[in-house]
Length: 207
Image (cartoon, rainbow, N blue to C red):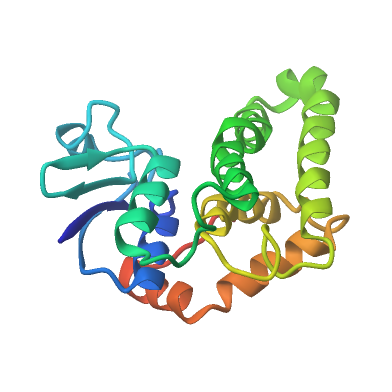
């Protein structure tokens, strides 16, 4: 059975959602952010040295990176669902989106989060950050044009992995110029498995 070390209001929500989509047997081990600092509790460092979430355990396997977790779970429990067939061009695009989500797209959004806390001291960086956010959101917006999901009409693990980008952008009020992303996030949140994951994992609010 998969054990998910789940931190509230974090990237681990999308792993819980994926487990629901897969119908895989799993157990949730919940952790709560500090009410004042919003930091993860120190108990998570006993799970992984970085003290981060998500982390999954599956027998002797322990994985901490979201993209690697999505890849592993889809391969082991997908039964051919939620990823294009290996060796196809679509599968290469799938892998690219899995890595792009955290490797490129989340970077300006996270920088924006920290710079916002600097107040006026962060003002000189604002234009560059805004430009980078718009650049990445524009790229995703174009990829979603005419499609329900990031690889076309079929839902895949890449949608799960990339969803956090859309959710954080929406929390920052950045989606008005990007209607395809806004519709895609709403479509993802309307999936029964996503709703079930919220019921099991607790409130999910990035605002």
